[in-house]
Length: 318
Image (cartoon, rainbow, N blue to C red; front, side):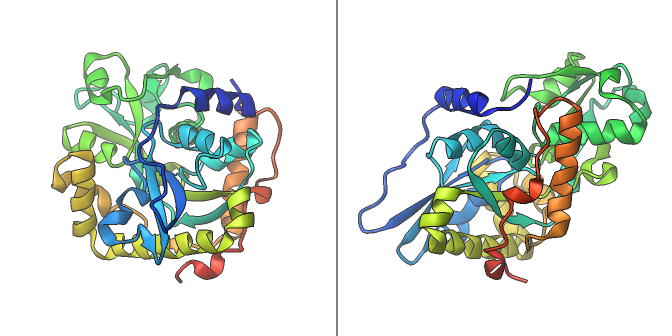
């Protein structure tokens, strides 16, 4: 399966409705799509970063993560989306009109291949022939491909399993329905605290896992000042999250209804700041493009540089 505009439009039709998209009287609204489970934007309100003067950032969570966020941006339902590092490649391949306006530092430790505590898998070499769960065309797919590369294995050396969104991965691991799974924080930390074992993290296999922030070309063209204000608020929010992890962990725990100690462990692994758009980020995405093309996940080779803009670098705190 390759990722095309048709795939995204179909996904958009299937989206469940999201709440509260009407603008409040007398205010401007910029709509921002995020995932509650891994996004920074999900807690903007906890630090007062959901407003900038009369501009309001409406934070809209998507349970399906990056694929649904890309679909909504493509349909004009969002101005900005918060994605994993693979998301922009999928969006570019599908012909979505956007630019990457900001990114975090690497967050490789926030994603990992895990197994049940009783599993006989103890190293990457042990995953050959095993059933591994991940989400196709996302960060988890990239982590698996990089793990296989590090182990000297091919994609065909493992059995690929795609579980429905919301599946209790830990329960499926315990039942033997799968042998291993790729997971991302904050769920990753919850699984590990409950006994699951980490075989390898994204940081150990070269999956950098930064978060990317993309804006529609329409928003950049007609609302560049508002987009710049978002980047400024985002930089402030990421800095607050790093400097006051206990405070953000409390907000995450309330949002996800999880234990505060789990949220805090996950929070302390998060990136400390944004980094400016530059050659290293572009090169990282080009590597994903090249591997995904080789795997048949995208139909044609892309120039990753075309999906970036450095126009908002001045609004990223140093």
